[in-house]
Length: 286
Length: 315
Image (cartoon, rainbow over all chains, first blue to last red; front, side, top):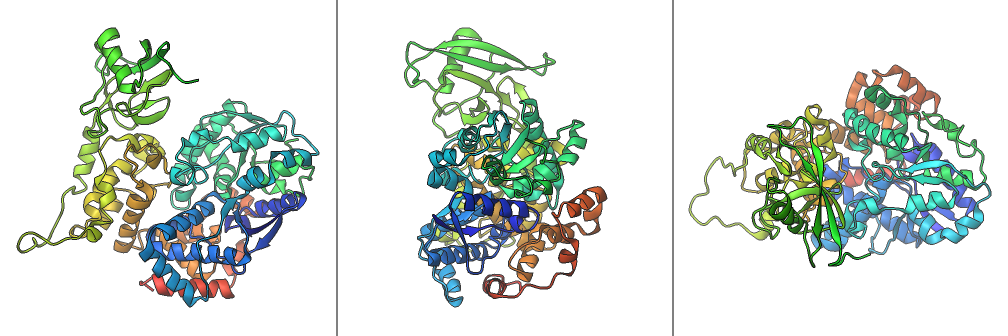
C-alpha cells in the first residue's frame, strides 16, 4: 500500500524519533511512504489565526501535491491533520475563498482539485492496515504493559470532522494498545488538551493542564503514555519535570509515540525506535 | 440498553449553599423515568416531589434563554434540551461562583464583559437613517449572534482552570465581545481590548468550547481566530508567538521550534539551563543548526515567499 507521507515540523526537529520510527514501522507493515515534492509547514495554529488565506493556500498547496501523486496524504501530527481537513472543508464550502486560493496556487503552477484524502497514521493502522494484519505482525506482545492513551485535541475535535460525537468516546488507541497485548487504562485526561499551542509564549497553561492529566494517568496505574501527536509528546515529555515541580509529585511516566509502541510489539529494538531520545527515560519499559 | 418507562433514573446532585455549608455534598434521588424525559424534567421531579429546596434555574425550556446549563456526568449541557440518562451526576457550571446547588452567579462574567465595551462604538454616527448594511458586511459577526449566553463553553474551557494565573477571558465573553468587535460599523480599539481584557492569545485551541455549545457556534474558527487576527493587525509586535511564527515561515518552509521559542522569549528561553542542556544532549534541539543555519532555498521556500507576497500585505 502506498501513501503520501507528510511528517510536519516537529517530526523533523524536536521529535525526529517519530519520523524515524514511523518509517521503520511502515516498512515492516508493507506501507510504502512517498514524500511530497516540496512540502512546507501547515501553519500550525498561528498562521491560520492571523492570516487565513495564507494558511489555506499553504495547505492547499500540500493537498495539490498529494493529489498529483494520486495517493492518500498521511500525517503523524494531530494539528497538521486538522489544518489539512479544515482547508479541505473551507475550500469546498467557500467559493470566494477557493477562487483566491486557486489563483495563488495557479501562480505557483499548481491546481487543487478537492480530491485529496487526508489521513493520520493512527487511522491508517486501524482502517487501512486493519486489526487482523496488525495482529499477525506482532512478534513481541507487550503483555501487561499498562498504557494510558493521550489522544490530544485535534484528532478528536472539532466534532464537525469527526462525526459530531462526544470526543470522550474515542477508543482507537486503546483498541490498538489492547491488540498489541497492552493493558489500556482509563483516566480523565485521555481526550484533554496538553496546552502545546501556548507553550512557546506561556508554558504555565501546559504545565498546569498536562500535570493534571499525567497525575491522573499515574494514579490510574499507567506505566507509560502513548500519543499520536508530536506536539502532545513535546509537552508531556519535555515539561514533565516542570509538572512534577508544580504539583510536588513524582510522575516519571515515559511518553511513547504511537509508532514506537507499535514498533516494540513488532519486535524492533529500542535503538531502532530511538527510545533514548526522550527526556523521560523510555528505554526501560520492557 | 435503551432507557424505558420501567426504569428508575438515579440522579446525584451536587448540593452546596455557601451561606451555610462548608463543603459541597452529593445527594442521591431516584426519579421514575417517563418517556422523552429531559434532564430538566428529572430536576423538576426532584424539586416537586423530593427536595423542594433544591436550587436550579430555568426559564424558557426551549433552548433559548440559556438559563438551565449544568454539567451532567462531566459534560456541560442545557437541562431543557438533553435527554435524561439512567445515571446522572448533575453539577453546577465551573468557573463561576455557586449561589446555591446548581445555580451559579453570572455577576463576575457580566462585570468583565462590561469592561470590554459591549456596545457598538462609533466615532461619528451614520448620517441619516436607515444605514445601509448588507448580510455580506455582517457575515463575520453573524455566528456570534447565535449565542444564548448559557456559559456552557465558559465552564468547559480548561484555560480557565488556571483562575487568576491566566488573563484569558474565556470563550463566552469573547463570543459576546465578537458581536461588536467583528461588526464592520464598530470603531472602538477592539484589538487592544482583545489583548488587554480578552487575553486572546491564551486560547489553547482545544475546541472544548465548541463541543459543548448547544447552538453549535464554531467558536474557535469563527470567533476566536478572527479576534486573534484583529488583535494581530492592531498590535503585531504584541502577538509575539504569531509574529515570530510568520517571520520564521518566511525564512524557510519549516519551523524550527527552538528558534521559535528563542524569538518569542529572547534570553528568557534559557532560564531553565538544565532543561536546555538535556534537550541538546537528547538531540531534541540542535543549537548550531538553529543559530547558524542558512536561510532555506529550494522550491518550497520560494513558494512560501510567493504566497507571503500574495497574502501578507504587511510585507
